[in-house]
Length: 177
Image (cartoon, rainbow, N blue to C red):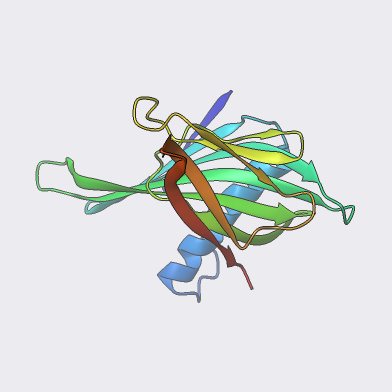
């Protein structure tokens, strides 16, 4: 299910914050909107645009894991696309950034920056987060990351295997606090 929101209003009321704080508040507000809905696979797309810059957000609720400490860990997959608008009204060199965001009992703990969005949408399978690169020709392996006992400080996402060696990428958890 997809829910599209075209937003120009940043919910700026009594704005004494800097633009970066307002942007961060907006991003967290969007995450919480998806999280509170709680529907696995819910996808929200938001576009913010002025005459010079375009910012797009795509947020997907992945699901939750009940961990060994009796907490619910919630997972979101967040994609940001941004770029400058040229004189013809087209976006030049659109950039992308992807994160897997982790909440504990609806409190944001942090996220893994996982590159430019080259993943299939992650999913939860038996207390593990499952990730797979989008390019099946180059990257055939999927990675299961166990979150039952703890939140890993870093994750290794496998791409392929050759001569008993795995190839892939390492991503580090960025604490919110």
